[in-house]
Structures are given as C-alpha cells and as structure tokens.
Image (cartoon, rainbow, N blue to C red; front, side):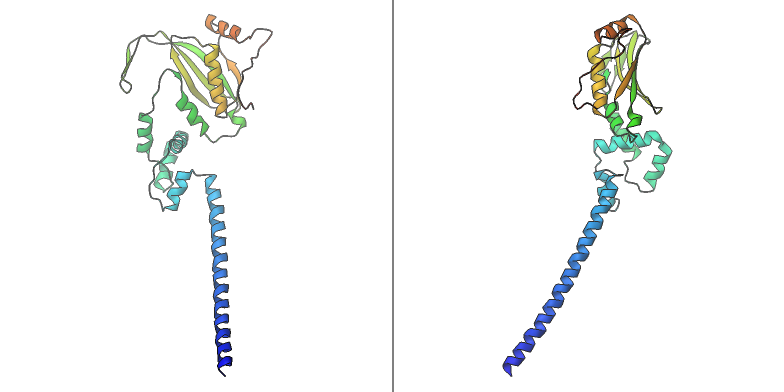
Length: 241
C-alpha cells in the first residue's frame, strides 16, 4: 500500500512538473517571439531614425545627448523646411530643439579653405545616388577690401580684393552648396583635387568642372593637362566608383 501511495505521489508530482515545463516552454516561445518582433521593429526604425533617436523612443521620449551626426542630419531636415521641422518637434518626434541646432552651429568654425563642415552635412542629406552626381564650379569674385575681425576665433583678416569661391551643383537634381573659399588666391591643381576627393569620399562624384578662362585658370588647366584636344583629367582616388 505504501508503495502504491508513493507511486501515485510521484505520478502526481511528475504531472505537475510536466505542466510546469510546458508552461515555461510556452512562456519561452512567447518571449522569443516578442524578442524577434522587437528586433524587426528596431531594424525598421533604424532605416528612418538614428541610434540616439531610437534610444529616445524606447525611453518614452526622455531627452538624450545627440551626436554630431544626429545634429548635422537634423540641420539638413531643418533647412528643407523649418516650419515642418518645428511641427514634427512639437509632435514629439525625437529631434534636437532649434536651440540645440543654433548652439551647435555657433560652435562651428568657418575658416578660409575647404568647408569640411558643409561637406560633412552633405553626407547626411538623404537623396538618391543619381542625384549626387555633381558639377564643381569655381570663380574669382571681387570684394570690398577692408579689415575683418572674427570675434569667435579672435582673428583679423587683412584686406583682400578678391575671393576664390567654389560651389558644387547637382547634375540631375537642382541643388548647390558652397564648399570652398579663400582670399587673393587662385585655384590650383592640389586644391581642386583635394576638394574632389573629399566630395567623392562623402558619395558625391564630380563629373564636370566649370570655370572661366582667366589667366590663373588657364594655368590650372595646363597643370591638369587639359587643352582644346583633351578636355578631361584623371584624379587618383581610393575605392573608385
């Protein structure tokens, strides 16, 4: 009788443990499904939002520290439509405030030469690859000669009569962006090649170059081996397109 009772007790315990295991397996599968759904959702969000923005969404809108890439992408969005940007921000989209954008821009250092900040911002501009094909144009412009003081850098610029300005424009899509300026200097081959390489690195292939035929530019074209019979030049760039 004692043996029978013991068997019944073990059978009952075994049944209970089996039910517990089945319940745990069910919970485990449910958690796996939730984890997979969460992973798929995060992958979908990553196509639209940055890592910082996803973190804000996960934390119920709690503010976080934005990276330079976050802010540069936000500036591109704000430039496309300031009113729309403000509307999205008020609706709770994980975007930096306009105050944050202005504070970040106030710290941007603009010096004569290649405008690396502008080129970095271009990298975050979400446009099609074909729309990134561009034309580089440069020209010398006359300016009023006067001493200029840059209070942010505590630098005094001596008077200059001319400024060399380079602008890149879309070949297919209508857009333009100043990317270089310098005073009282001509465009030379090294500077031109450096600009083209930087644009290429950010995904903007330069397919044409435009300038007038001033004496300084004629010297540049000679340096590049361009003439009436040869209207193209080659530039060595790593990871060519």
